Image (cartoon, rainbow over the protein chains, first blue to last red):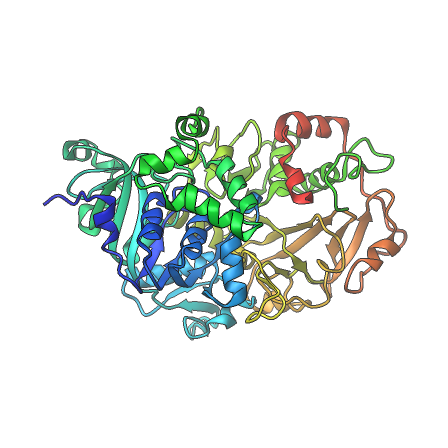
Length: 293
Length: 272
């Protein structure tokens, strides 16, 4: 059975109240086309798990889709703070369950391996452990006397990741093999949706099986979306769109301006093509295309 | 220092600006045994790694964005986690397999971070200003700071805003650990090494070998120890004798930094 779905059908896999882990890192390889579909569908009460992210979280909060964020860092880096995230957490509209990057990875590894906890040195001596003493327990190894943090499993309902290619059976290729933390996100999740730049025939996977990143039995839906990480990057094909980040940050200084910007540039376009057109179309696509490697 | 024009950042008597002085000062600390990587918004240390590698430490290891090992970018970008700085890499590492195992095992030995607040022991806050549950400002969060500050033995700190709001007596939140509560606290926690240096826009601190408190190692030209004292929210320890002036960058270091490492001056984004 083919796992290829339209983006609208795949988005129906995400019910209100779901815990959704979003792949990518910071300005890179985030499944933004899928995130936009969730924004347009007005999904409610999501718990987002972005280990280190920015724009995806900010869109979903701006659209009122989020009640909780489990994360290690949310920002636009050199472009500044993520404005809707910052305002929503400061006002208490969105609850933040905060960890560090490696504590989240360790929690996902514990979930993936079906272990009661994963040990790590991460966070010892900081205030981060005290935020969640039940899920990041400071313990002492009885044999050596050494301290470690026991990071308990983090259950994830749905992982959404962006990759370069997939076949209709659900084999997925991240090529080059830059998986960020996505590999751990996929392993921890009950259901995984992969958006990909292109669908390729199964024989393409069978002829070069060493290049396969995720096997078909962990992938539940495949959605073909070229430029599907825009406005984040997808190495080595295209870079993040600095123009979009700048315009978004500038618009966020005034609530009315932001509302109009968000509606015109993110929410209103019906198709992915119309979304790209609303953000400069071919001009933008050509300008972010990566020329060197 | 609040503006970002070249004139405002000029260092009196030196043929450079304070951003350049900071980068060169950090770069001098790095050697062929330095195995470094970087996180978000880390223009100053990234420029310093590249400068060191292109001058006195050609074997220095730098993993751009903690991913692109030996990257050799023609210029920096708006984000130090951006793939725009990965050109020329000899390996693209994957976070769970090729990074965290090397970090926790101290194969990587050098990490630099900064924060909205810093205390005398080099602990850093990048999480909230004000009470955690009702923050005045919700900052981005520590990211990997809590992890890597525990794992990496050679920690370097920097700040482009040396003022009482940044250098505080007590952090609102400890996102990353330096020397902890001072003395042998870090060792008692079973953590390797600790902060070596803190380079600011006014001065350079090292850490007292016993108390692990910040100690003035040098002041930048035109800055007095009294001025540093006045804008630091804790007692600044002084070295024996006169406080030296931070050494001047060489013409060659400045040329390579300006023309080769960071020709579009991305580092000035930290001085906005």
